[in-house]
Image 1 (cartoon, rainbow, N blue to C red):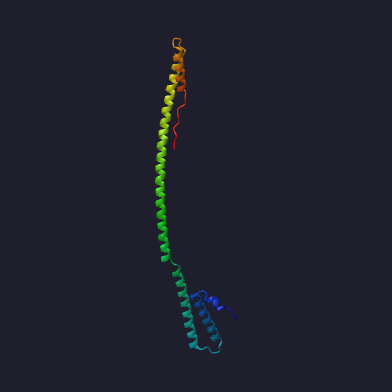
Image 2 (spheres, rainbow, N blue to C red):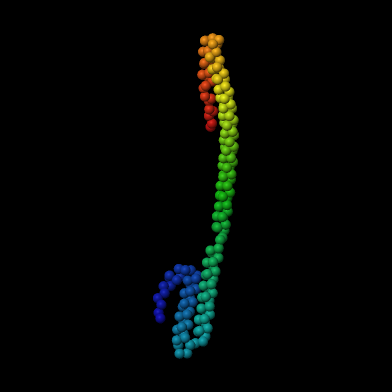
Length: 169
């Protein structure tokens, strides 16, 4: 059974391909020698030794491929570089988180101050409403002079103005 094997294609696999090609050639030599009427024993032994050498060469090729695929210095350097980048990013995140936390504390403080201001404004508005009620009842008293009534009405108008809302920024 003739096989058309392209040796250049097999040798492109490196040491593994060379070992396979040598083992295959040893197999063909062995089968040709065994086709003889009287096979030569010394030739068969030599072919078998050559075949064992080819198999050992294949094993060395597999071993070298395995070792080559193991993580080496390049991977360790890349891992170290990535660890440094992660540490830098974590430091940046911590810095930004500290800024965010400071801003949140500032906003919370402003919100608390605004709430206190609004509560004080509500109390003052209630007090102003009480003054307005008292002043309106004073305006209707007949003994209050007309000039005083005008001043009281202006005061009532001023007390009715809404409080100024502070700007939060």
